[in-house]
Length: 440
Image (cartoon, rainbow, N blue to C red; front, side, top):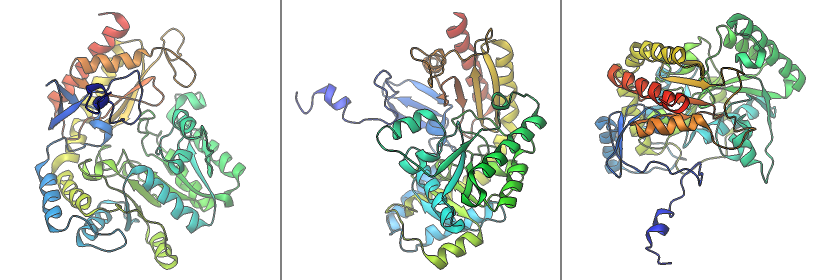
């Protein structure tokens, strides 16, 4: 075979989450909330690629800041200081909950979660971290151990075991057989305390969870749940880590998702939206106590590209953009998404639930006769009609994301999306569901 054979060239790049049965869109250009493929087809990007292009695909201020920084100095060692890195850390301290003050920069969300766990274990002198079943915290070995999604963990643990994490049930109705929010908060909180006591509180360094679930279903906690979690952490001397890789930087209508719950975490991990995904950047924002501990004892771990100057410049410009009406747009337009998705639920018996917050929503599907999922990839093989809805929507010009597990769709538009774009995407989803499930 020639080195320049077209088949070979097409296969030269192996994309992530590779599935030989699926051919991904070949995206070549983007503008605002839309992207175009190499054939010239245009799509509304309502998955924000990977829940990260919060400012859309053509923010000139972010692009200009990256260019300016690259011309000033394109790289500074992560073991040294540089003004652009310090400036972004100061900005993050201003927008984070009041008890958080210092940032350790990283590259990806997986690595940020691993660093937060390492900080917690060292600070607490304890080995275990509690995370939820049906959660996603990353795909590296350390973050994979934290992840409760079985597809991810099964892939990672196929040849090598991971350790150091214990799981508890998420606060969702099916886990506790109740639709009453107050009862759900109570039962889920009592369950978490049982797990803490069963594991042994002294062995637990931290509890790590997303304020609003990301790809695992976009489900928010019932009112009062996070207050219970915070009380348990205080009672048993456990650190609370908010994984804000998806929920951070305006997606839930506040700078950070945990701010919609009115509790203060001991750390926040972030990535994705900090630069609107224009450059890779992640990190951990910590309390003064944790920062002092690290500075006193040292931390002999680092990453070459952690806090890359060009990425930090992108982050500073992105934070400025979020401050200029973008987060307010999420608050103003949330009702359009909420009411539109509730109407879709009412229109289609196969839609069993819609839930979310801000610009992060999940649509779950189930057989209306039995209440069972049409296809649960954890236990079922074969075709998944929910995947067909995503494909049909793509054919109609809108990109949505698949959830974990795959009986749900995640709606996650750029935070700049306007009402017309939201309504167009909702109409497309409604029509795609009708085509796949009702043959219309």
